[in-house]
Length: 165
Image (cartoon, rainbow, N blue to C red; front, side, top):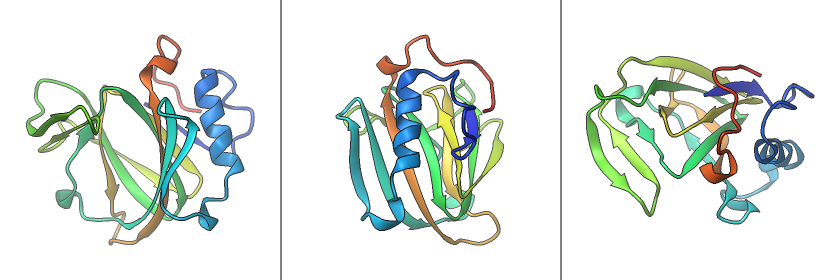
């Protein structure tokens, strides 16, 4: 997992070209003027999903993980917590892996760390990062968020471990 701010210019130079391209797309796009939906960056290899929604209490959200895609979760407007833990044997599966949707749900996170995601923040989550997005900070509230889905083939061997940008 990597955390950063979209406005931290020049800090993403160490990231793989595909990640830099996705971050540039996020910087250059006015998502407040667009309807919810999918926006291609590189076809099925890299695309963005824009959503307006209301955050929820943690117990209303199931943690998830992916196998094919990494996520770049970018907060356009609003705030939420994203709870994260490493993929491991202590996690209990709630819904088995769905290859068509590239998603697997768990009952909870063991252990968990909460990251606040506020306007301008992003988190890059890899398949080993089980995450529960959409968690209300104090009370449920509206957010505008983009999730970039990036095929792991674009990142093979290229992500620096454990750094914050």
